[in-house]
Amino acid sequence: MRQYHHSLHIATHGRGMHDITDQVRLWVGKSGIQDGLLTLFIQHTSAGLLIQENADPTVQHDLERFFSRLVPDGSPLFQHDQEGADDMPAHVRAALTPTSLGIPVRNGVPALGHWQGIYLYEYKQRPGHRTVLLHLIGE
Image 1 (cartoon, rainbow, N blue to C red):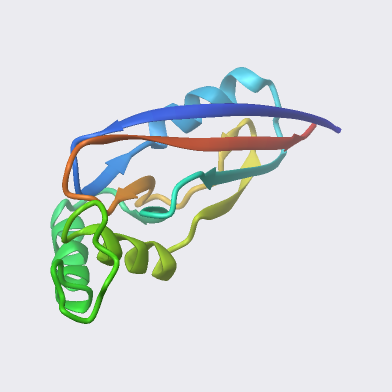
Image 2 (image 1 turned 120 degrees about the horizontal axis):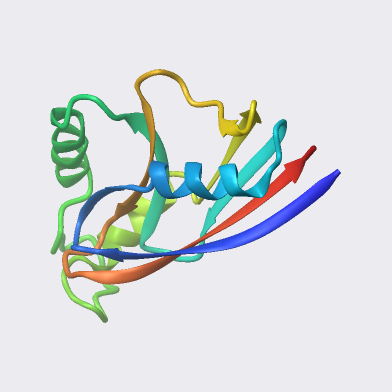
């Protein structure tokens, strides 16, 4: 068994889903591993990782509308607002979504379904930088 590690540094444009599928596929392909397990982990408490629909962008808009209704910015429910009205809502959103993903690798590529993409979901309103750690183990 071989294993590899990598960090993706993603510049976000603010709240929303950022497709990182191509970056992940490229790195997995360069590794030379044909069959194994890829783990992704985001090192932040106000962003998450999702495997989600990659064909129809209205899915992303619908998810954002759902989260905005579920966890609205500026809610009087929250005390923590050190970084603004979206601070605690971003933490709650991150608590509701995965911070890590496990994806099988088959024939040298992540074994995603036909309509699946890998997304970093940024929950803060302002642009920022996020780090996603990748770990690949296999043969």
